[in-house]
Image 1 (cartoon, one colour):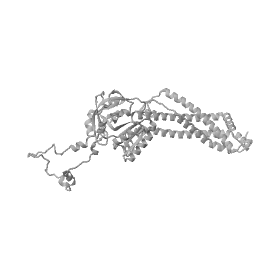
Image 2 (cartoon, one colour):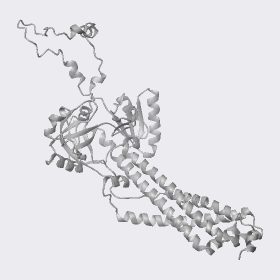
Image 3 (cartoon, helix red, strand yellow):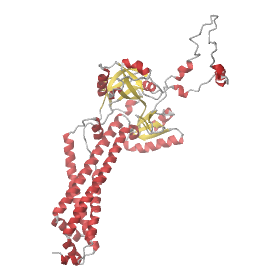
Image 4 (cartoon, one colour):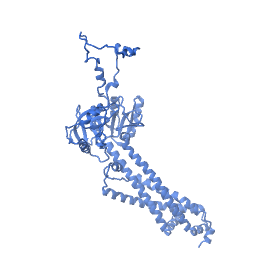
Length: 502
């Protein structure tokens, strides 16, 4: 083995021009692999840090829907569907709170809202849209998070206010971020301050709901990372109103015998005839009793009451992030054993489309690696073939002196392995140097797409041990694959060629 290594080193040095060309390609491949993975790591780390610290915590519990349920809605084939109300909320909350490794829990609900100008309110109630409503101002649309006023800040201790106050029990209001406030001021064409009211139209499937809600605070995010500008925090009852979370769905309606008789009638012509029969008072005047013509409206009012026990989610903060998968598994087992239509998921499930961007970038990176590997294999293969042709005399002489085909095969394998390891290591060192330079340049994201790609406002690639090991393994495999064809060419050379070639 030692003799084989000595011969391999000698051959690489004697053919150093070809060795350097191949080595540069291998080093460049490692740099691209490591830095690409580092950008992906920085993106994933930034988004995970931002969302788990500020929005999703470590675990989310939701109801069951036709599509994936996230804090930002239900992704279904027909678009966003209504987010399901969490069944047996108190039972789930009690169990989750008692679990090992669970540090804090909180309930939450979410919906979409659209900011309205005063002159648009009447049109919105008639489900009409004006040109101003269709302006496309991104700050006109809200992701509204309805929070548990008592528990929310236990799960999200990094939540802080720049101005105003957090919700007190029973308090109605909305908390905006600074960028959102500026955008709304441009859209509404007026200044906004703590105490001013916003008119918000609900964008749920339950019909048009419009509320006036005071601004009670301006929040800021401590942790750096991508943040959706349209996110605002509301009191839970306002979100329930906008999302049409009424108590009516939980009420069993009891009809009187007279009411049942109306539905059981078989003579619908008489029921809707043109007779002059009126519902009147007991007085002799025969005038119409307008106050009671609709009968007792208490049931209708009860059906329209907000369901104060309705929540969309339970968010859980664990004492250690790495225990989240085990807690999720235990929760899903509990739901199955107790026949509860609920499910637990990780922060990616809670973040929805925002977390999907990490997976999409990872897929693009993987495809890029495949293309890069193919190109490098072809170039190295061609370079090695040329090298083999130039070494015809050497290979023929070795064979003439008694070297077997397996020896030639091991020789080329050793040379390729040495090239891959040496120049792969050089590529790793260069990657660390380039990564340090990139981080020191403090490259800022110029738009929201780059901010999502960077995982925050600044490009912060992260090189890990796993990234380095993976890149080195890939580049060694690429080198090994590239050497197979040149070896097959070398093995076709007969010893007699050593005599025939000068």
